[in-house]
Image (cartoon, rainbow, N blue to C red; front, side, top):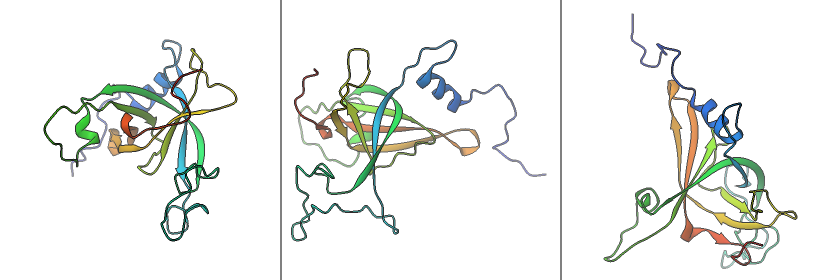
Length: 186
């Protein structure tokens, strides 16, 4: 008889997927804490490579900064609504963001944000997280207006029961976010 370390010996463990869903959307005992953002996914060809926008210059390989199709990114993409939980964690998480960067002497203070996503969202390093302008209650203003575009620095899949993915954490740096328009909320 062989030993299987992934056999659940007890039904008393918490289901992390359900806990995250309850936190995002609420239940009878908990207020919803999630908010909606746009997840911008780069379009891919049959070889799973990002598809370049028509605005990319053949010689310089640079995108047109004000291109209405790619918004200056150089790649075609699609956006979808997803629910997330945003947590500002300050500069204490620099080891996840700047893990390959050598720092000179002095003070480095980089604000870091982590976005938590459900297991089925499957974010990647190539995606972008787009925050929209919101009213004081967290409802996106209509017409929708992009506020910040975040580039993931680290995408971590957190696994638990039998190795299944329970949720994703996407770490971003404030210094790498792209401000859209002015920085004041209206």
